[in-house]
Image (cartoon, rainbow, N blue to C red; front, top):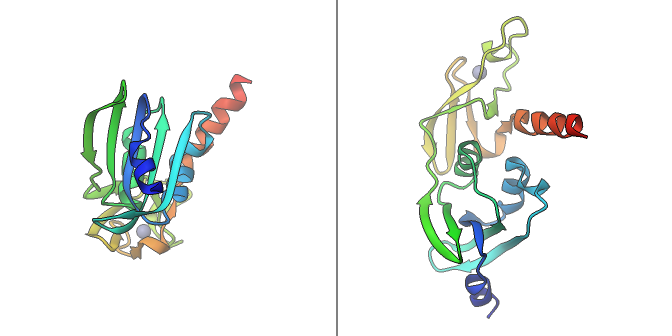
Length: 168
Ligand SMILES: [Zn+2]
């Protein structure tokens, strides 16, 4: 019953992020900064799913995702689908796609890695070795990371906070 309701509840205009790996919805909201949106959001956690047993789902009114947010979602949930809604109808539906090389979004935790050089810091780049379960490799120092070991950069969020502070 509640599953049916969640499926039927439609948003007028905005985005539906579906087939999120169960338990990752809140992490995704935090990482993408959507948790700071004042817009109406419906979040389903551990919703029954025929395809994946359990899944999370996020519906957010009046928001369309940018490329960085889509990449962040793809790292956490490579099976996620993004539907764009307008006038209660799905106008576009796509599966997130994890890039072959993830740039800037993740930190390398190796202190001696060139990406952590204080003199000439360079953007991190990680080669995606396996999508699920995720396995990535720093292209500079070759260190490997699994999903649960990843530390994301928070640049986006910091910049956004700074901008908000200035506009006040
Ligand atoms: Zn490295």
